[in-house]
Image (cartoon, each protein chain N blue to C red):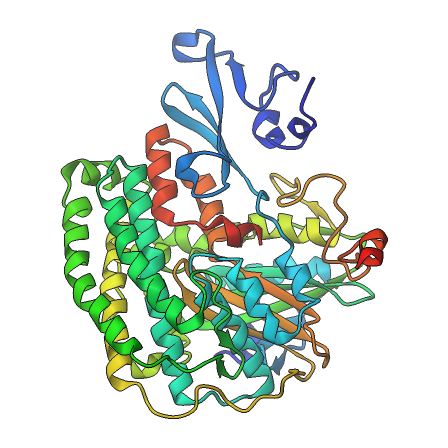
Length: 401
Length: 150
């Protein structure tokens, strides 16, 4: 019996130059003129959706000539939950819960994007203390997210040692985030107007203890993986995305900065307390997988630096502005973006004056990283493709929404 | 955020597109006719707007409004192009101008029930065949049977 899904997926890859219309997406394609004019065969391999290096449910169809990838196609939708549609049936306070389930490794950033959009529409002034708490939570969350990427990127490239160390450090952050928000991944902490609750007593000691340890551990991590010659040879010069291509495909975040484009939402379109915080934006030069690695490692250092500043300079005051229980922003359209762990997470909010959004569009940075991959992967080796996918840190929860 | 509506008008006029942009909360927004979208985006691209940040569609209840969000990293500026098309319209792909439109276009066409022309791979992106265009206002989030059960 044939799988009806085969009629839908993989057609694009197979359609061009196909000689055997009956073959399934994964299989052998005869190529009439190969080396020396002899008939050769291309193998079409179905990588994913249950492949350990696809970080969730990414499916990549690759056509192989030996070890080399001739063409690739990315197939999405395995995590589609209709977040944008559901948002049209949620009150504005509840939109954060949907964003948590979009990019589920850095939920604070998505929540902040929605909150900023609503605040801009309603012209809510957020208290300074709430802004600083948001920044601290966002940077802690960024470290946690980058640690997941660091651990799994190592696994993709053959390093087994760093994964559990990364998870150990992430655990300490999740403890802090849980103590503050009550959730380890689904925080629902940032609300329009501020944050849902003030920091609990004694949290500063917990964060400080984490930072003291983490700043040492991070250098160990970097030495363990980044100092490894085998890892370096796996990622240096692999998956080059130059600045022109990065801009053309709409990359943002660390992927864009690794290509040398100096753009960070926190600096260029500042929000919350970022204008008051001191941090530098690391840039890469060549845009290869190594640059993306180096940029993210430096981002973690900068995030730790910012969390320390937030602890030291946390202003006194209210944790939230006075907002009505049911928010009714005026009719209008607004865009709010934050620098999430994966790039520019943006929320386009269209309102009609009611208590629910008329339309919410979620700009997912990973979607744009993925379409660049379709262009970058062909011409590389299959093993390199795994390293390239890992280096871009895509999150399938937000591409599918 | 630069530029304002008059600057956007000059930029578009250089590409032969007549529009009356306005400054709203979103930024400088130009409404153009559907067949002028590619010209408008091309003239923006040649004016140094390197990147299409995003594109999406909104069901206004009578038609579908499409929005292109274009940004120049070198000039630190961003503008919006909007157009309105009928429900059964075919939208022309702009991937030749901005390759970053490839996947968002597929998603927009699929979720709003539009046809997609001039695209190298115009198939559905997120849902499988038979799923209604979810972002249409007329598509409910529950089936009548599910609504009854609640």
